[in-house]
Length: 189
Image (cartoon, rainbow, N blue to C red; front, side):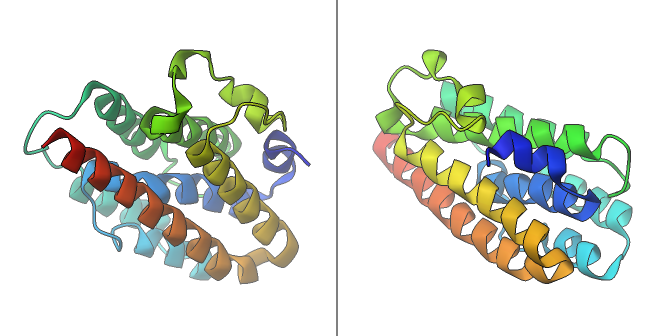
């Protein structure tokens, strides 16, 4: 089943977790620590105060960068900020499916921008990859696509019990992206 199909079939919790997981994996681009979105994950488990946790995360992640980023990282950071800004204040809001879909596209685009093996990023059909066409997909984008599918499948198959493994999938992806960002920063120095 394609990523687009999985998003179309996901319930509210699956959609919220999908969007949150995409955002969580991209937090290194905003300089956020690994725990900044943890309260949002917890609120999906216990029905806690998603809106309050979201506002704290927005405040914490809105930090100025110490030096101007490279052009591609600047676009990537803008995409991450857009995901965070567009997050609904209620995890059962009507725009949740749209947010999850937007986060999916943004996260794949971010991974494409940061993937040195991707070559010309202007011609990559991220939308085609989401539909299941993976010819010519770069390694970093392929890994992100697999993680997005895994999160949605975990939530579809296990409900709330899938949140912990979905967080683990997201944590792995965050570590990979943090390493890519670090490697690129060393290359510029």
